[in-house]
Amino acid sequence: MIALLGATGYIGQAFAKVLSERTRAFTALSRKNLDYTRFDALVGFLRETKPEFLINLAGYTGKPNVDACETAQADTLAGNALLPQMIAEACAATNTPWGHISSGCIYSGAKVSVNGKISAEKDLTKPELRALLEKNPGAFHGFTENDAPNFCFRDLPCSFYSGSKAVGEEALVNAPQCYVWRLRIPFDEFDSPRNYLSKVQRYSKVYDNVNSISHRADYAQACLDLWELRAPFGIYNVTNPGFVTTRHVVTVLEKILKPQRKFEFWESDEEFYKVAAKTPRSNCIMDTTKLLAAGVKIRDVEAALEDSLKNWKPE
Ligand SMILES: NC(=O)c1ccc[n+]([C@@H]2O[C@H](COP(=O)([O-])OP(=O)(O)OC[C@H]3O[C@@H](n4cnc5c(N)ncnc54)[C@H](OP(=O)(O)O)[C@@H]3O)[C@@H](O)[C@H]2O)c1
Image (cartoon, rainbow, N blue to C red; front, side, top):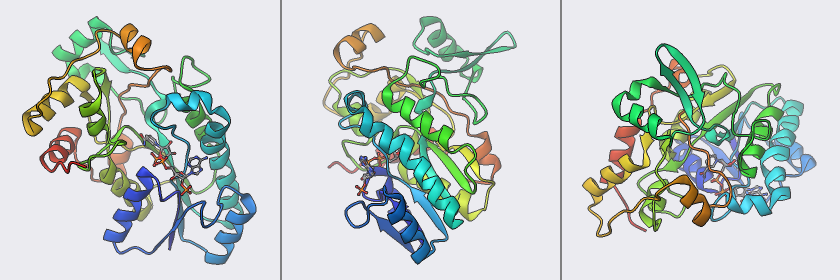
């Protein structure tokens, strides 16, 4: 049996669905039936039921978006930094292997090669970088699992949410039998306030940037495959290989869904942050070489994006 903590959430529901499809036995825990945020309750559950594996899908994301974490800092730290640390202790005490849902939002930008020299660039909205991206997308490389986070409390600026996720990862550095699976901007074919493709369609104006993104079911499949394959424990970037600009997403969306509305874009970062957002947003490219080398099959971002839009299910 696999135990899911926080299975009621947006990502938790995807894991529950994939496990059902695979006919794998699982127990979906919610704080409503067992307060797994209490060490004694969690250890008691693990000792009694002895799951073969545990997945921590719980966390504090801020609703409707990460701006809410700026004013709920204690809850954000409790959900994203202290909870994973406590789960690590409980799993170590009961010899339970487990996986934790982290985020690529602890990075900003990409690694860019110019004249044979690679440098990390935090802001991919710079006009010279956008021009290079148009001309030579192959010059842009994602952050690997070995790169130190550059959008966190140790490397400011960052959002409080991103800072808390990076602290959560640090707490797990020496955790035995632990996967850290980094998710980035979930999307799929199911219209939802949490789906990136729904958000893009509903924003009054769209913020254009460059990102790696994760199809929700592909993400759950890939994480579970890592466990089924008994891939080495540790950190994995789990996105659909490649990256997209928001402008490209809008172009594909216009081609497939043919929406009535015309899309407008924020003129500049300055205008976006003055009007639409309070805290800095992470936009970044992730490297998926380690995931693929572990033997996980996951389609590239273009295929996942087109498929989601071709099978779009409006709410
Ligand atoms: N959605 C994204 O865009 C995104 C991107 C990257 C990473 N992530 C990470 O993925 C994980 C799951 O995110 P999600 O989008 O599925 O979040 P969600 O929809 O808000 O669900 C999270 C679940 O966590 C549980 N929980 C435990 N302690 C909590 C607390 N203090 N406050 C709120 N909920 C708490 C709740 O389940 P019960 O109360 O039923 O137990 C809740 O349903 C998080 O670690 C998040 O940081 C999400």
